[in-house]
Length: 473
Ligand code: XLS
Ligand code: NI
Ligand code: NI
Image 1 (cartoon, helix red, strand yellow):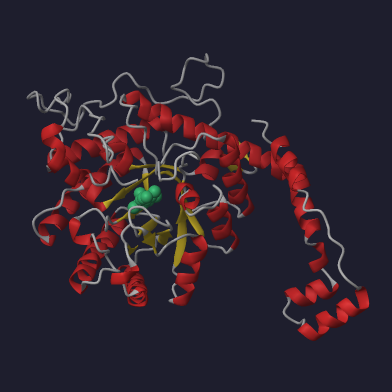
Image 2: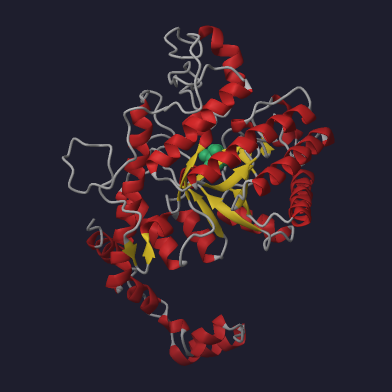
């Protein structure tokens, strides 16, 4: 969600109203030392399935080394934390001021503050046992007055990121460029009507790809929050989409030129902040990629809360992308069914995590992608501990989802039922249809010889029962 990402700007306008309760050691004249602990009292989170029920700082289901269907849980799940929500989020929303004050964050846009945040981030990832992280360029390094200064800041911050990655073994799942928060992008980045803005986006992404390569990113994401329109009256849709296609061609060319081997990803979202976004949903993005000849260079990063915003069920886009070989990674969050927007909640519903893991098992795993928690604690959840509990809860929910999906797979009943449902395509006229040999004339002959088809049951309730029967964990 965006409130967190806007922080750089929101903070400037709102800081005079910010609560005076801000607890910052730097403001009190105390210096942070590199060796300081940011989360004192919180240990490395253990796997303790039998801990007493009031202990919420342990995993009860996620046991990274446990082997399930020939692979460790850590390999199946490939969890990642996102830097923007968890280390730049303030709890500000369109109606309210920041609520979340981290003791190490003095609210300034300085390199020193950025470095403290990054160190805090890596302590968090390590204590959580998270093997991956993700960020936007502007989350980790302040913008300067020029592109040169901005890039220099990024160099300094990514030097530290590299050092921390090497020290902790935490890897970069993907990097991305923030092409939506700064006012210069208010009419879009690669779909801006102003070529100067398009050029700015290109310059920013050029650096972003270099940084991704430097940090060994396994992917690079494009989320087009401003690529779309507020009104068709002022918009040349065809020209904008052609520009977006041209932009991605340049991205592919530069990626190849510098030898960045990470997977390029587009993250669909139908709206918010823009009224209509071009990357509406998985099918729309796949068709965009095919239209512009980009489908072999890109895959999709699916966020279930965006999927529900597009009017689909939680797992819909994961399944659609997967079935077309285009599922690259997942921003595993969830919305609130009783709210319409992108609330970026931590996924805690076992039914949903099972549906996602079912799709992942069916495609044989998610590598090089992962389950990135593009999620934020509620603005009322202001304690450091809440950040841990949220991730633990989501990781445990996914571990349970994995076990349930494996159960479903091992039972094999649903799979067999689905296969049987389509068995008329395995031979005869059905196989002629699938292999492209049938014609309308042949279909007519077939009906003359075999008569009208008899309706068969869709058995939805039976499938729902089969699904529920596997929710054993
Ligand atoms: C916003 C998106 C964003 C992307 C990265 O809704 O989810 O956070 O994942 O820019
Ligand atoms: Ni989102
Ligand atoms: Ni996302």
